[in-house]
Amino acid sequence: MENLETSPSVRPLTVPDRGMLRPSSPPDQESEPTRSPKHREQPSKSPRRRREGKRSQRQGNGHEQQLWEMERWRLPGQHEHLEPSGPSCDAAESSPKRRAHFLHGPYPATHFGPKACILPNPTSVMLTGQETRPYCHPTVQNCGCIQFENISDYITNTMPIVCNSKRNREKWHIQDPSSQRLTWNKPPVNVLVIRKIRDESLVEPFKELCRFLVEEKQMMVYVERRVADDATLSKDEAFGTIRNQLCTFREGFDDISDCIDLIICLGGDGTLLYASSLFQGSVPPVMAFHLGSLGFLTPFKFESYKTEVAKVFEGNAAITLRSRLKVKVVKDMLQRAGQQAYSREPEHQPELNGLLPHRHTSSEAGRVTLQLQVLNEVVVDRGPSSYLSNVDLYLDGRLITSVQGDGVIVSTPTGSTAYAAAAGASMIHPNVPAIMVTPICPHSLSFRPIVVPAGVELMITLSPDARNTAWVSFDGRRRQEIQHGDCIKITTSCYPVPSICCHDLVYDWFESLAECLHWNVRKRQARLADTSDSSDTEN
Image (tube, rainbow, N blue to C red; front, side, top):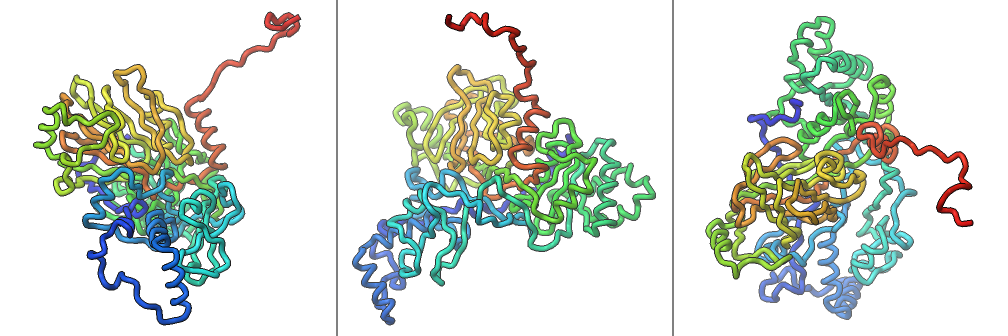
C-alpha cells in the first residue's frame, strides 16, 4: 500500500503535547532565600482578604501544598501552565517517584479540528463511588460546594461538575464513552477525501463521492495532489468540472491541519493510518468506508454513503476516541563515553528494576530528532542483523526488563489487533486506556505480553552489551536505525483519532472481530439425542 511507504520529502510535523507538561516542585521544597518578594505573603487590605489570610495562617502550609497538588494534577478545562525549567524541573524529570500525570493518561481532547467536538451529556457522567461534587480552590470559601481535605480524596471519589464561586466557574466531567456523540460548533465546509492509490476499482467511488460533496452538499473537497493528477481522472472529461474545483495538497509541504472539518477515507485500514499521520495535533472526525482488503477500522459500507454522510453532517453520530502514542526519538541522550565505561565495569551495572544511573544521562547531549503521533504501534526490531535484538525497557525511568529476541512492539489498543495480535498479544477495545508491550519471538519461555497504564512513559534503549544496532518504525513508516546512546520515549498522547461509528463503539468492534479476523469461529458442537446416558451423571 503506497500510503504506508516512506517518502524522502516528508517533514515530520511536531506539535507539543499539552497534556503531558510537567509541574514545578512543591512549595515546601523551595528554599526561602530563593523566593522573590512578590511571592511572599502581602498584608491583606480588605476584611475578606484579612479573614482568608488568618485562615491560611491557621492551616499552615496545608493550603500551599494543596495548591501545588492541584497544579500538579491539573485536569482538563483548567488554565494551562508553561513547562517549567531550571533545577526543579530537572529534579522532577529525573525522579521516578514524583509523578506529573495520571496513570490513566492525559484526558483526551474533546475538540476535533476547527468545528467538531463531543456533544455534552450531563446525564452520562461517570462517577466513582460517591455523588459528584465540585472541588473548590482551597482559598475560596463559602461558595456552597463541599470542601475536600486533599486532592487525593477529590480524585478518588469525585469528578468536578461546576463550582458556585464566581472565581471557579469552570465546568468539567468525564463522560461515559458509550454516550460519546459528535456535534458541530459550526456547519462543516472543508472535507478531506483520502483514497487508496494504485487501486483502479476505487476510481469510480471516488468520483461519485466528490461529485456528491461538491454539487449536492456544496463542500470544499481537499485531495492529495497525486490523487488529483491520476491519469484515469485526467482522461475523464465529464469529471473535469469537479476536478477543477478540488483543492490539492502535498504531504510534508502543505499544512492542512487547521482547515479540515471532516475526513472521509476510501480504502482499507492503511488510509486511516495515513490520515492520522497528516494531523500531528488535533484530528478532525474520520469517516472510513470499507473498500480495502481487511477493513477492521472501516465500518461503513459505500453502498449507502449518501445517507451515512448526511447523518454525519447533521451531527449526533457515535464516535470512538482511538488513543495515539506520542513518540520522541532522542539521539545521543546517553553519553557514549559513559556508556562504554558503564558496560566495562560490572560494579556499575544497575540492579534488577533499578534506576537508570544519572551520571550516564545528559539532558544537554540529547536532541529530539523526531516527534510523531502514532495510531497503531512502534516496532523496534533487529533489522538486517542475524544477532538477537537486545534492548532495555524502562518505565517512568525505572528499568523493567531487557528484551532479547527479534524485537518489541509498543502498541495502542487500536494497534492490539494489528502486528501485536500476530505476535500473540491480547486484543483490547479502543476505549480502554492502556499501552501494550509485546515481545517479538523472545528467546524466553516466560516473556508474555503485558499491558501498562496509559499514563506511564516508556523508554527503549539499546543494552550496553548489545552486539548490533536496532531499527524502529512508526505505523510502518519512517524506519530508521537506533544506535548506542539513542533512546525512544513513548507515552499516550492527548490527541486521539475520533473515529465515527456505524452503529456504536461496542457493536462495531465485535463485528470487526467476527467479520475481519473470524474471532472464535468454530463449527458448533451437536446436541446429544438422549442426555440420560451421560457418563458423568450420577445415579
